[in-house]
Each structure stands twice: as structure tokens, then as C-alpha cells.
Amino acid sequence: MAADRFNKDRSWEFIQNKYVGTGHSDITKYEWATNMQRDTLSSHFGHADMVMYIGVAQNDSHGRVRYQLLEKMLQPCGPPPAKDDDA
Image 1 (spheres, rainbow, N blue to C red):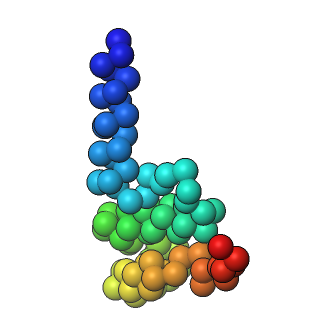
Image 2 (tube, rainbow, N blue to C red; image 1 turned 90 degrees about the vertical axis):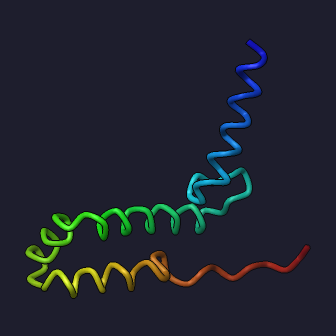
């Protein structure tokens, strides 16, 4: 029983190291939202049918939609908030 608990802890650490978007206890709301937006945009970008669907809905070519998705990935939630250097 105890060995399973330690294996789960190790596997959770492995998942956090492998996948950036899984987060940790010190992640900020902005970082979490940025990770979620980038995951969603990359999923849309990777599925050609979804890109075509968005293109039809917006009356744009699929190339323009792909470009717009890539542009949104740079700062999906806007510029990062100002950091307090009180520490």
C-alpha cells in the first residue's frame, strides 16, 4: 500500500516535468490561464477540420485562420501582469 503512494508521487512529478501545463502549487492565475489557452489553441491548430470550421464561420481562408491561431499563442491572455519586487 505504501509503495503505491510513493509511486503515485513519483509519477505525478514525472507528469509535471514532462507536461508544462499541469501546473504546481506556486503557479499564478495568469500562468495557468496562459497554459490553458495555448493548449486549446494548439489543439485547434493541429486539427485541420477544426481550422476549416473556424474559417467557414469567420469567412476566412484556412491559412489566415492558422496564422491567427499562431499569433494568439504568443500572448493569449494579454501582457503579463506587473510583478511586485517586495521580496
